[in-house]
Image (cartoon, rainbow over all chains, first blue to last red; front, side, top):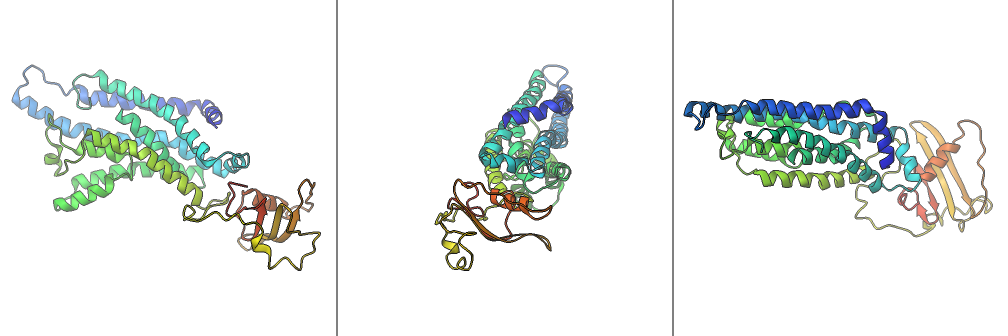
Length: 137
Length: 237
């Protein structure tokens, strides 16, 4: 099953590239959002500090709120498409006739897509943590 | 780490979501709406007016493990020590989601949705496959062989149907709407026997085999393969 998933992914290179590209884009947007949120001098002037706090408190959560669904959709798209397609094409029942259990079938998708999720998450993490002064760290 | 956990928890969530669909394109479109849904709840809660209790109740319902993304939203809505409390800006009075709780929620989402998927996959009706009863966990597996046939097979010739045979098919019927594909098929197959089903196109040969292998659910009648009913013990079959 893992090999089957691998073959599907390798045939859809465009989708895989988009998946990884979106992670880069998402991470980059977060980095850009948090980049300007620094004090110009140390110690921070009170007025500037207040402005930065307001910016941080609204700007970042709002960006994440709008971007997270897109990011999660990129991950879920493969599962939604492939699992339903397996049902449509009788592939799943055929595999079950060959004694494949429901658990093994489900686990194969979970493990395989988790690898991609890990890569995407690491890319986003890299962008987030490469900025020292930002609120997610 | 949170993003990795979120993306992983989205996988079993999507799998559970996929059990409701039988068309992959529809699944993608509706699935995307489901991914936006937590954001809509989150935005509606943080911008709504009303008493704190109403907000808390609304918020509590929304972030509960229904949607993995809600864990992160809840964390963002919680005031942090060095940041101006978002609750003061957005009129949100919740401070019970900290970083640890967010991680726990995300981690819990993975096994929770995975189990929900396995359950839904077993019980949700599909075009193909035999589904289990919604309370199948509580039911005892009945492996008693042939007990359902004792009262009704008497009139059928022993050549066609013998109760001692390992494969027993009795009054097997499959209807697609008003069309009857297989009508009261009754027969038994002996062990080691080479059995052939002959018939013209549309006679119902494939449908009968599909029912015996669990690809299709029977409309009525029973089939028992080595003591296991295809309707209740398809996994053992």
